[in-house]
Image (tube, rainbow, N blue to C red; front, side):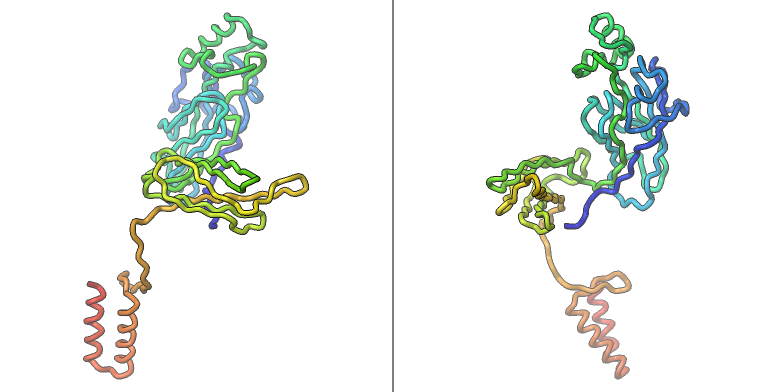
Length: 323
């Protein structure tokens, strides 16, 4: 199948960091700050990193000029713990949870060929602790005073009160150009005994095309790149599961690293299709093949004989085609 990987611009590298422990700053009043690397946590990069529950990351983003029309999506591997995402001062989304990937649709504010200012407001209540291990109720209560809107007790954590937290975008950040409708990820389970492969799928939020107008096309390729199983089915929901069976599936083993590849594509489903050969005229009109043959024959006759009656036949046929 055709390579349909999304155009992707990595946003890893140097950002600017602005600590906001008193929660006084706004997205439109950020100073330049100090350099910081993404992915990474500010505890490993800032001189005095503790008791900073709220902080800002910002940088400039140049969207490639040659990106085709579609949705522009900011994709985050993980941000510890909660965050709000801004583009040119406008909030475009947010997330809570420090260990899971998420994306934000920035299509409404970002444009191909333009420079934008991207900012992230990060809140991590676990960084309110400045001594470890932290067991006492007094320590935890004092830390919660730094961020009452997101209490430490509500942030899922395990042994994070035993040792330093890791705050900020500690996984990669990227800008992607997707189609108006796109897949949000796949899950695969394979049975080596039967060759059955269960493929779970779901559509991204913010799509413009109803699920009922789409088809899911699947191909399973063997290690040699040959298609060994395929499926094509209409969609009726935003998520689901499809089964395909690989005949005589070869199991993976040490010394025999057999890997199959699943390629999944979304296709727009047509209610009706019609196939007919045609040509395109210089004035943009479409000319069916039968009329094209007659028109070519008439013009050829005029060129050879110069008969005006034949020329009038061409004009009549031209009018018919345009109509």
